[in-house]
Image (cartoon, rainbow, N blue to C red; front, top):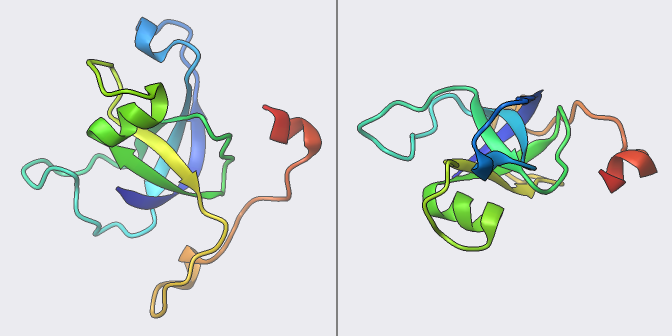
Length: 117
C-alpha cells in the first residue's frame, strides 16, 4: 500500500469486461522513494487505480495492490484485470517530519452533485 495524491482521471471507451463500470484514477505517490509492492520490479508512477470511493483530483488517498486491491474493488479475490485500487480517502494525516506537501489539500469542498457521483 502507499499514500498518494490523485492527479487525474483515465477514460477508456474500450476496455476488458473486468474494468467495466470502474472509475480509473491517476495517483502519484506522496513520497517518490516508497518501496514498490514487488522489490524486483520498480513502481510505475503515476499508478492507475480503480476507485469506488469517489476520490477527486488533489485528494490524498491510500492505494492497495494485488489481492487487497481486488477484494476492495470486487469484494472477493479472483482473476481480475486489476492491480491497484483506492481503499481510503485520507481526511487528515499526522506524520511528523514529513514534507509540507503531504499535508496540503489541492481540492475545494465537494458540492452535493460531486458527492453523489
